[in-house]
Length: 184
Image (tube, rainbow, N blue to C red):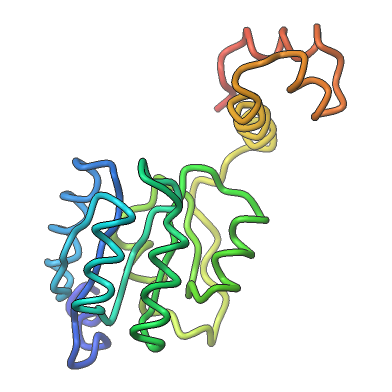
C-alpha cells in the first residue's frame, strides 16, 4: 500500500511538518520519508512561516497550538505563497470551531492527535471524492465529554467556579467529575 501512495505524490514531494513536539515530529518525518515525501521540519510558527516564505512545499502538516502562537498563521502564509499546497492541520484539541476556521483559511483536512502516518498520508492525498473511513477506535461519548470539560477547565486557568459557570453546571458536580480518572 505504501508504494501505491508514493505514485500519487506528483513531481513535487516536498513536505513541511510544523509541530513543537520534537519526538513526534521526528517520528512523523521518518515515516513520511518512507512513504516518498521529502520532509522538512519546523518547531514554531516563526520557523514554519520562514520556510513557507522561502521554500513553500507541495504538502504541509501543521499543529494548531504551538508554543509561539497559532498554527493557522503558518497555514495562511502557505496559502499566500503556494495556493495549491495540500495542508492538514493537527491538534490535540479537536473542536468543530477550530476545524471550520482551519478549513476556511485553506487547510485541506483536519485531524485530531494522536494521528499516525497513514492517517496523515491519506488526508494529504485525499481529493475529496469519497468520505474517509471512520476511525477504528473512536473516543467514547463519555471520553469526548470529559475532554471538552478538561479543555474548558484549562481555558479558564483551572478556575472551577468559572468553568462550572461556562459549562452551565453545578460547581460540586464539576469538582466530582474533575476528581475522577478519565474515561476510556
